[in-house]
Image (cartoon, rainbow, N blue to C red):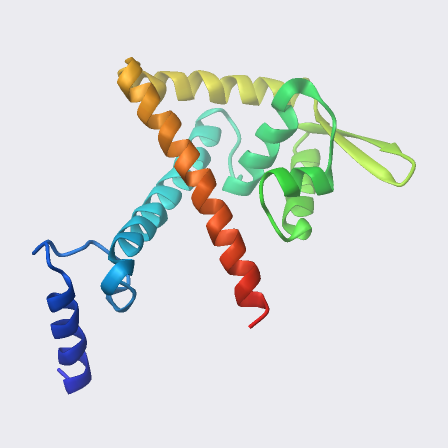
Length: 185
């Protein structure tokens, strides 16, 4: 082991006063005050990958093979509140910076016969058709059976989920601000 690596490990061990070794994906990012943030980021990475895998497998169980997590998110958002949506609005709500990614999913969903389009002037509006609504309904039923039924449903759990969702929205704002700052460096 190089001297530099030994020094880094020694410095990290000294900064870890709790005696607990953090579970992180990048030890070099987990020193000093950033230890807890690094642990959170690793948890977010694992949760994000698990959530994406869940969406893909659930939509597959609902009868739609070869869909990506983005395709699933776009389909559900278009179905949300049974209102027509514009490409830019879908990308904005899903916090997807590259509209081409959303546009690719929209074309795919249209080709699969799950969404309808309507042109109004220069705008194209997207909505789920009956087939798209049926897939969303099957996804909901599978989600209820396999995922929601695993929750206890008690008030404490509901409160924790609500607080976690709030905290993730706050952190998303911090990461967005940091991303804007990094762009100007």
